[in-house]
Image 1: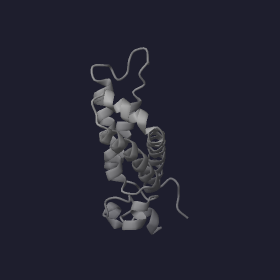
Image 2 (image 1 turned 90 degrees about the vertical axis):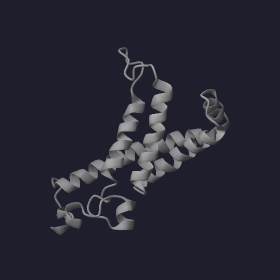
Image 3 (image 1 turned 180 degrees about the horizontal axis):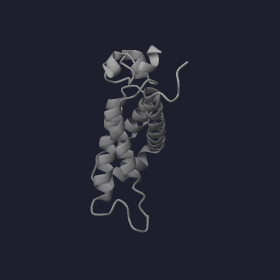
Image 4 (image 1 turned 135 degrees about the horizontal axis):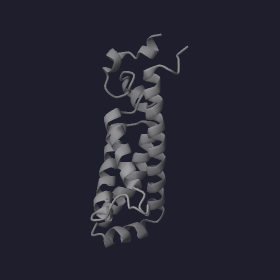
Length: 155
């Protein structure tokens, strides 16, 4: 029986929690946008973006969030979410402090950006479709992790 205290298992559970939390946020955000595209297109228009961009963001968040939850094309999906959040940070926060002294701005966008970037670098982990589909090492992303065999699997 595999011990919960083994490092590879901890890393994989951490990646899973990160993927589920981030994926759900983006999935729900995309779903809300898709439900009222007229409002989203209008809002994006006030910032100088085209309707095409509004649709790309809405469906990108919806599909990217679902992909992150499933651990499917995780690094790519997380990178797309990070780019979206970088644009949000630039457009909505430019000239404003990300964390205001009165906490009126929570820095939520920065947390989403950094979480997405963490997944870009960490990969999906063991509990993912990426690992199942491409049989890549214990981390589910590099193929050579732990010499291609996770020590937790070898016991």
